[in-house]
Every structure is written in C-alpha cells, then in structure tokens.
Length: 254
Image 1: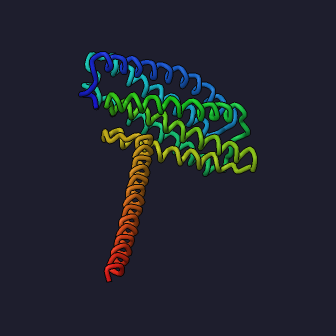
Image 2: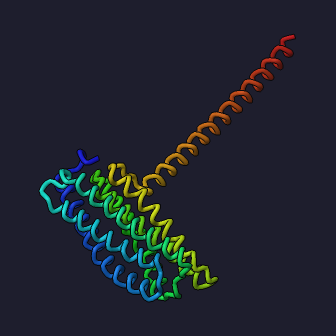
Image 3: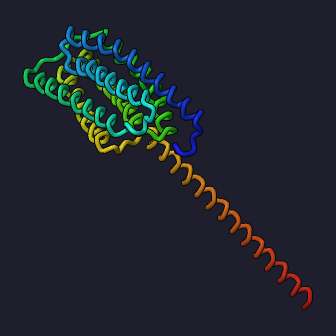
C-alpha cells in the first residue's frame, strides 16, 4: 500500500500520526494520574494497573513520535516495535503480581466513583482514537503505528474489564472480580507483546472487515444461485410450453 502513496499524501499521514500520538500522550497523562490516584484510594489492583497501562501507552506513543521525527521513519520500524513489546510485557508483569497478591490476601477494592468515571470515559474516547490510528497505520503500511493502535485497543479491553470489576464489587460485593479482571488484561498484554516483538501485527478492525467481506461474498453467491435458479425454472417453463404447443400442432395436423 505504501508504494502507491504520493510524497504529499505520505507527509499528510505523518502529520496525522504526530497529532494522534500528541493527543494520546496528553490524554493518557491525565488518565494515569486520575486512575492511579483513585486506585490507591480504593486499593484497586485493576485500577492501578489501568493507570500504569496509561503510562505504557504514553511510552508507546512517545516511541512512535520519535520514529516519525526521523527522516526515514520506516527504517526505525523494528526498533519501535521492540520498545512497544517491552512496554506490554512490563505492564503484564506488574498487573499479574499485584492481582495475584490481592487474591491471596483476599483484599477487594473500595467503591470508586472516580475509577468508574475515568474508565467509562475511556470506553468512549479510545475506540474512536484506535479506529483513526488503525486507518492511518494501514494506509502507511506501518506495523509500528498498528502496534501502537493495539495499545489503544488493549486500553479499551482494560477499561471494560476494570469498569465491570468495579461495578460488580460495588453492586454485589464481589471483591475478587477486580483481580480477575486485572489477570485477564495481563494475559491480553502478553499476547499483544509477543505479536509486537515478532512484528506480526494485525488489526481487530481488519478482522471485522474480513468477516464483513466474507458475508458480502456469501450474499453475492446466494444471489447468483437465486438468479440461476429462477433462470432454470423459466427455461423449464418455456420448454414445457414449447412441448405443449408442439403437441397441439401435431393434433391439428392429424
């Protein structure tokens, strides 16, 4: 895809990447401060992990920003992917240890209105930002940009898991839900880290589009079959009418 880009279009996409990472860094610095502060107050392993994930996202976005300030960003692709992978692994390690300790000590978080608020806000903002960055990364054919977008997608999963965990604890007193949510996120972080390290980056939006394409292809196949079936029935009806007409002519001749 990158070979079809004009120099002007590539420059536009590079500016868009810098805007995305600039917004990501600004938002995540605020998110990290609020989430870690709320997590400490509520003793929530998942909420603290969520705040640290914001720090990881800042590091990932900073790595992308550094890459796209180089004269030849594509040259630094592999280095940036390694940095992003290490950030994933660091996040997974901390969240896992903290969640396991909380489960062993049977300590659940307190009710956290600020935690619920910041995770709910992220569930609104992050999907839009991730979708925008995925589109940009695909057009640039940049694996590092796609890997950074997966950081944002992981934040969506984390926001949802932490939000559900906090809600379950607040509504039903399920203290363990917070730690379980944190472990799930750690597993996802390890998986994404391995993919980034290998350079095997695929967008979940891409998978959804592939499924839609398959659905469209199946619909077109069904339409062709339906048209073919109707044509066959019309040919059969014409044949029967032809046979009937031939029979009537033969009878008149007799």
